[in-house]
Image (cartoon, rainbow, N blue to C red; front, side):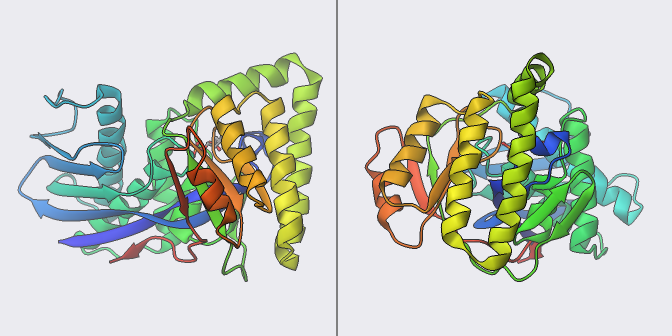
Length: 327
Ligand code: PMV
């Protein structure tokens, strides 16, 4: 039996624009998915214990294609099982085994579909745990590559490398197309997360921006402007200038709003954090509903978010410099 964990992430800068080749800077956060894997005779048995779901167990004789009889949304179950099934296949492929059963148990404190990279964290931790259980020792970057293949397959080709690379490697990373690297020398960023309790439909939001960009020059210019903000953000990060980082997060949020991916609830959390003296605040991930990320070294933004109607949860989640690891 092996347990592995991997962190969730926030986008400090650059979501959506990264889809069109601009750079983005996702950062791993100290909220992890933990996955325990044990070999069994045959079939896949999965137990999910997620923040946003009641725990449940599903057992399959062969591949995960049947319909489980449980009391949670079928789309959530199918999505979760799809990721785990593909991750287990990647582990089998890495170990050169055709089949073989697994019992997989997932524990995650990362809200689902809320811009914090829950699926990438579960996939990276599953691949690391399952390969170790099969006696194969993958490096973090090999886990990143295989985790990306999983997201690419499950999301029908609509996935950037950002989430999976960040979760596998940890720390602050830079992603531009297929070029992914860790930004060295960053060991702390005082992130505060606000969560509106909802989720965004990444596919629909990405499609909306794609359409807007085809229809209007301003949208293409806005995507390019986000790229400029990211490059300025990289310089501020290198200089350790938190004040400027905060300002640039504010600009990035404004540009995302112009692309139509924010919402009343995300705007209200962003403004609550700013009113609470955060250095800056923006939505993180695809948008719609889900999470915002603020930068604040004090407890003021956290307190402001705690008192904001519509904020289901607010928590501090500092940068996590460690990526996927065996527990
Ligand atoms: O909300 P998330 O964590 O799935 O992030 C989506 C980020 C996008 O840039 C909008 C899409 C992508 O694949 O990079």
